[in-house]
Image (cartoon, rainbow, N blue to C red; front, side, top):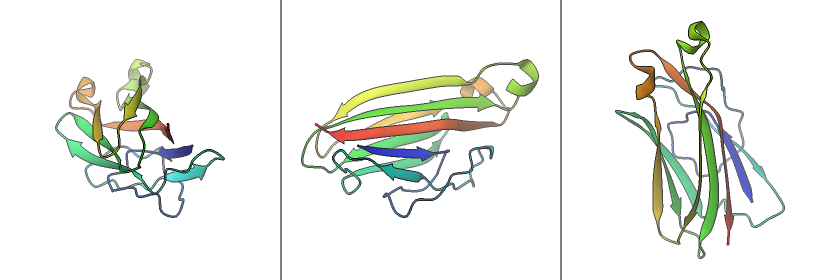
Length: 133
């Protein structure tokens, strides 16, 4: 199993050297934050699962691509925090997905920031785990 922690990175993550993400920085189109990777004892999929992020009009699109020989199962979760939440007392908007992804396929999820209106926002508590089945 491969566990990756990140905070709205906007670069292709190919599981390079681990680095700690700054999870307190608000999102902006120019924010580039590296991920932290921590391998576990299960099958290492670091060479065949790639996650890319891109700004889209609704927020951030996270695309998982599986080049492993087998199908993988992934758990992916994140929280969206609007800048106005501090003054309104609103809780982070949590989202989670569990999915299977066949070899050679991609899947995209969007962290939708439209609920924040014109206010700033950030992605927090982002985690994903993928394992070969």
